[in-house]
Image (cartoon, rainbow, N blue to C red):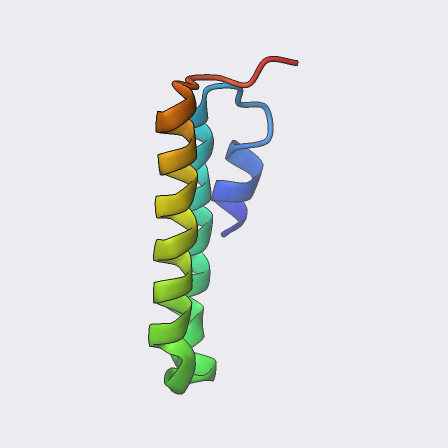
Length: 68
């Protein structure tokens, strides 16, 4: 989770930001079953919905990077 968080800090391209975000979320997804197996599916579905929604918004806006 830390690798994804630190790696995505200086990125401006949305693909790279989402890739690092996915790495960070994978780290959390590995930890969830160890502490609370009953919420593993809920966590996975929540992540899927959030990621799909984000990709859909970026696609509809034809966004490829973040302009500051």
